[in-house]
Image (cartoon, rainbow, N blue to C red; front, side):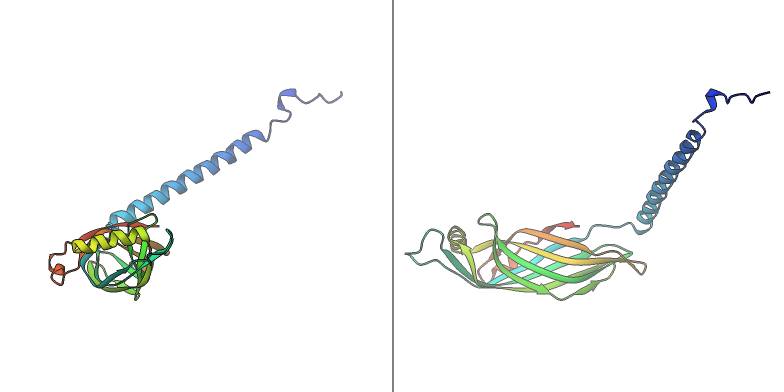
Amino acid sequence: MPASAPERGNVGYGGRPQRVAVLRCIVAAVVVTVLLAGLAVLIFWLVVRPKPIDYAVTHAVVRHFNVTPPPPDANANATASVNATFYLTFAAHNPNRRVSILYEWVEFRVLYGGGDPAQLLAVEDAPAFRQPRRNETALAVRAVARSANVSGQAARELRHDAEQGEVGVDVRMRARVQFKVAGVRTRHYDLEAFCSPVVVGLSPSAARSFQTVPCDVAIS
């Protein structure tokens, strides 16, 4: 007797259930991985309880402030120059109980906002340092403006400020940092603190009335 022909309904469909099963396993593995990662982050947060770092300019004095305007016959785009020495105290407060901070390099900039972009007056580097847990570190910064070029408009505004007895500047701190938790270091982060306006009096007694200026912080 000749062999009967295969049933038509069973042709070409044997691999489909297997592919569906494999796909379901992959989706389940991805979901479990995401849930485990989220659980690890939650446990880390509950154990470490990270708090934001606070930065502020707590003291500021300027000495030898002088603005040299461009020559009278200069064109409209001629620049003026600024000489000054800014003495700043920059406070970094780490309130965390389990997180210390490693500052690999630190840079401070003093800018004047009389224009777009802001006019750069002085740049000063600070030494690398380690900030322990629950610690406040005060950094003494001496930023010197040596014939810093500013626009004519900014020079006029600076001279007007000087006539009023005080100058408002912006202080920007940039740093490369690592965080350390239980002996484990994180990857490197770029940290920036922007403090504005830092109003500095020009009289010798102005330092006593200086008001602390908190900073906005960004970490990326």
